[in-house]
Image (cartoon, rainbow, N blue to C red; front, side):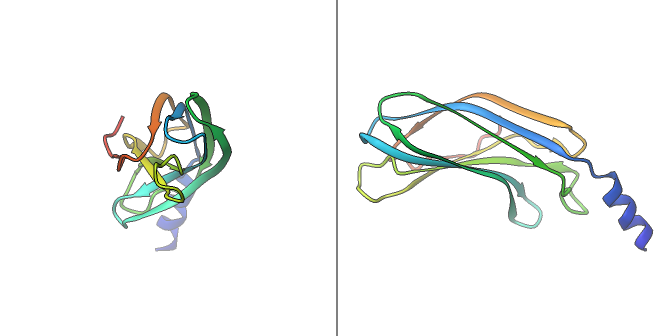
Length: 137
């Protein structure tokens, strides 16, 4: 029984994820923003953090480029042979002072054998919308 488990572990290779895009806030003079790149586990209803990145304070009414890169090599569970990448943008580009918003973007699943996943050219408008974009790209 140990041999199949060791074989499964040895067949898992790492995958590098790269996400690049731009974001804009039209509501505040300044806003704070951070990113989380996750591997969403649909079978076990959990998510694993691949990388987080604090982008700091940004000026409003200007488009800001961003990128986040992370490597994931933990596999995706015994019954799951695909990664489900997900990006969450945490921000306070809100009309209510002190309020926080999240933009969630799920992407198409990729086989765990994929060496690199590049998701570029994304555009996000940050504001008060309850933006839960779950449409895979």
